Amino acid sequence: MVLAQASGESLPCKTLTKLGKAANWLLSLLDEASGAVPNLGPNDGAYALPLSVLSFSDYRPALQAAGLAFLSVSFLPRGAWDEFPHWLGLSINKERPQARRRAARLRLDGMDSWAYLRAARFQERPGHADQLHLDLWWRGLNLAQDAGSFVYTATAPWDNALAGTKVHNTLILNERDQMTRAGRFLWLDFAQAKVTATRADKSGRLIFAAVQHNGYEKLGFIHQREVQAEGRGWVVVDHVQPKADQQQVQARLHWLLPDWEWRLEGQVLRVRSPRGWVKLGIASSLTEGMRFSIFRAGKLIHGKAGADPVLGWVSATYGVKTPALSLNVDVSGFAPFTITSIWTLPK
Image 1 (cartoon, rainbow, N blue to C red):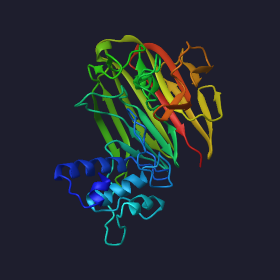
Image 2: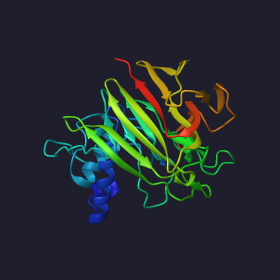
Image 3: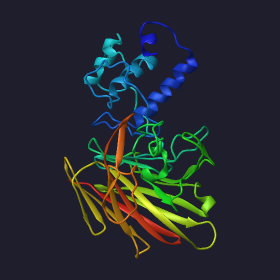
Image 4: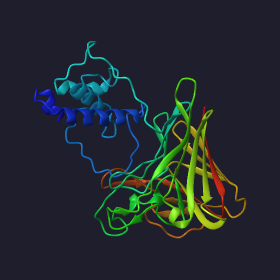
């Protein structure tokens, strides 16, 4: 469609509106340091028109071209990403206004970092059972990441295995997905999320959000999550609330981190990023029985847990998977209780 618009062919007004909204949404989740975006849901795209020296994961060339072609605006300031629209004959000059960046609904901003909190109201078939998943970015590094998809049609366990709740940065209760799986691509009884509170700073940037979803009501529980930007770090508090009287439940918190050097010191996991040590501390109101396990490339490398070949992988592009660190924290007891994750970023 970019080529059609650049060559002078007209596009329907509704199509332009949809393309504009999609581009604005993508722009709102763009990591400015790397040009990447969260790897949410199914990922089976293709790089059919590589008219830029920048990488496949850098969305800035496509966004700049889309803004110029469909909306006659420049989404981004001048940069290396302008090569793509240049090859399409789309001029970039002072007469082209630069679009104002719109904030995503649940994009939170911290100091040199930002987070995206997943809280969907599904109108159509969901791709992944990933409610309350959190993506965390710092200085171009995706610290807490989405595993992607890998492949859909391989033999078990790789028959769209990365669509389940357990590989996302959220809670899984009683080892049950948030929704009922009914085939490789089909989920039943959609888990629906809602935002219960938000708070912005003086400049209008979102720094706090509280959300919940109803996917575990069938088990008698509500999962609530609060995310707060705090100084040079982040605080994530997960609440497990019973719908009626106190009930016993097993909860597992999962964080997927890059494949970096790591050290587990008590209840604090340290990972060595290219820009210094990042700390992730875990605490729970259930003071006893918290168990830590770490998987890498499908293998257990710390703790006591059963084998699980799908943990410890990330798939940035379809059909390719690379090792990552899957931190699992298991607690069990009577709800209500909380699990708190404290991210501390280097200066």
